[in-house]
Image (cartoon, rainbow, N blue to C red):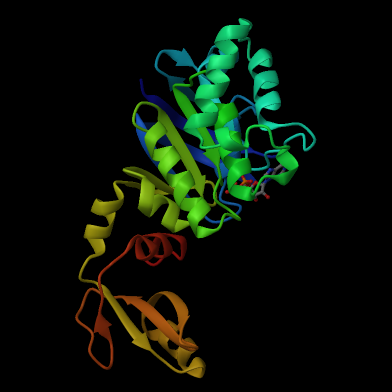
Amino acid sequence: MELTIDNLSKTYSNGINALQDVSLTIEKGMFGLLGPNGAGKSTLMRTLATLQEADHGAVTLGNIDVLNEKNEVRKILGYLPQQFGVYPKISAEVLLNHLAVLKGITNKGERKEIVHVLLHKTNLYHARKQNLKGYSGGMKQRFGIAQALLNNPKLLIVDEPTAGLDPSERNRFYNLLSEIGENTIVILSTHIVEDVKELCEHMAIINQGQVVLKGKPLELIDQIEGKIYQKTIHKNELDVYKREYRVIHEKLFLGKPVIQVMSDIELDNGFTSVKAGLEDVYFTQINNLN
Ligand code: ADP
């Protein structure tokens, strides 16, 4: 099964073009949709999840017309929204069981089995009797995945799922998603480059409602390999360097600014050549430096 998005566009009533002719083909596995805040990621995710209308364009999932056959999509869709609210005063097991009823799993025995399988899969079985109020951020997100998997979806959409997770929670969450990606289309929308670097075989970068780059992370990195240079500078030199070079991004290292520059010609003058990374690919696109 394949998800095909064709020239999808959306303008909100305030005039913001949140999506402009977005076209993507997404196959089974982990697909990373990377972009800064306001890029249009959630608009795209909500449209794919049948929660919002597009102005024009087409989306097909296998042979389902996503924009017009919403009920068909919902049968095979799992969605973890950016803001996932849980009822704080009931246990994970009770809530998951309740959500399973809402999703139409009416047979009690079958439901119990599915709920237990999912609690194991998301590593929450030991905490199944705990109220969700006491769950950590990572546990809540894993619970969000458990509920999204209740109908054994063919398409799983997760919107900014790792924001606010600590490194070990994030790792655990990555492992869970990559396991699911083995036989499901998983779209991970995120502004965190690391999420995509760690997890996704395919990706697209979206900025101001447009897809500005798509491909495989490793191939996209390869295309700029050998062109990335680094230099530690003084704070007051930054503007000068920005005028003279294509400064991809700057960061502090031991309190000193370090700039990362892209150049087609070899640079000396205190610059060192460094290995290209996905951050370089990302910031080159976002800052229009290509
Ligand atoms: P992202 O998920 O990448 O942060 P969004 O899809 O949330 O991006 O937003 C894309 C753009 O559309 C932003 O400029 C945002 O302010 C605007 N936007 C999002 N939702 C609405 C809405 N309901 N009404 C008007 N503007 C919106």
